[in-house]
Length: 116
Image (cartoon, rainbow, N blue to C red; front, side, top):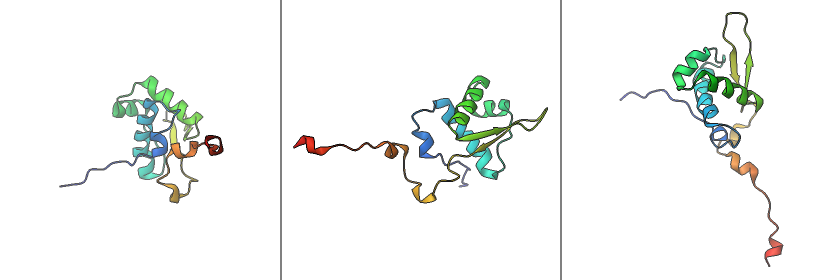
């Protein structure tokens, strides 16, 4: 049995409260292109639309949402060329925190003295 390629999806993105489901799916396709080579994703929006099943509108909105949250960057390459998208999320993160989920970052302290 041969092992088929896959991408590992970060929990930080999966459980992100401010990302649409479309942006999460789009991000997973970026993982396929950007993380496999490290050169960034230069696929056309039409190609990304065909791969993910997302409309061109949702591709455009997902790029905007991910850029606004600082998870990706998009660079124009010039007339007639596709834009270059890089995943920047996690580049500066410490790899020791791989198991940490975003929900653990939102923990609020509780004053237990009022319960006595």
